[in-house]
Image (cartoon, rainbow, N blue to C red; front, top):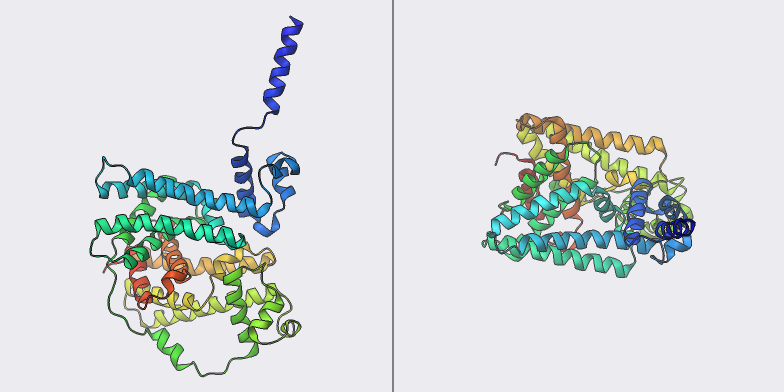
Length: 408
């Protein structure tokens, strides 16, 4: 009897010490949670190993370094989007419209369930190696290409470039789950995502174009002199957008502005101070736009159309720093809280107006819809393959209005 018990105990011990088959996926999930909570640069391999309950050497059996973990999370997320697309659109038993509806339902559920993956794709992908960044672009293009082909089957009047634009905007609708922490029931959230994505895919793009009042003002003021401080803020904003806060040095900013790195400190005491100055300038531009709309709008709907135009013009010349501020650990708690307050107040203005136009929406629902529309602008404007479209601002304004559900 003792021998049998001893054998059973030994087998149990072996089972308890065996690595689970999905250990790599478990480690990646733990790392993703830490990256989202603290930011990629604030998390070390030892942090991930400790949170996963393994040793550092055990983690290295699955990943060569932290960057490899991030690449695994981001690329696995895109692969899941591709697989979900294939399962929905390859269903020969359903007509194309029903296939698209099934795809939107699955994508909405994924976006709500895996907001962490969407967050890393948005904020941390610039920390991937050049090779992995190219792979992200390749797989993303493959995903959009499949969506675009199907959309053109449903809407044969669209050319390939217009279909691509609408599909990229739809991807942003689902990616908007990463830019805010609004709490809303999953069923309600997925319903809003599906409705917004479907509306965007069926947007009729405008053909006319012209300078907005904001563009006219910018043209008129093009010859005004700028200060060295302004030049540094502009240079820093562009670099932060392209590389991320942590991979930009004061020397880089000085070089972009035409001065030496140490000279930058005459104007700003730190890189964090420069980031705050750049983010505050964006906030001021948005406030100027809001005040201009307040002086001229004739209705809540008219005000929202004005805010849309103002937001597009501001984002076209600015980095998405307001939202990204939560990822910059170098900011003080007070600075981060201030930027969050400014952003929250700005979104609240849109939310208030949208509820006047669409009273069937609750405050939380309206806020979620507003974030969808703003995310479309943030993403599309900074997507290189779309930036060259000659009528992009007018097209974006139409797409955002459709996403918000505004009357034509």
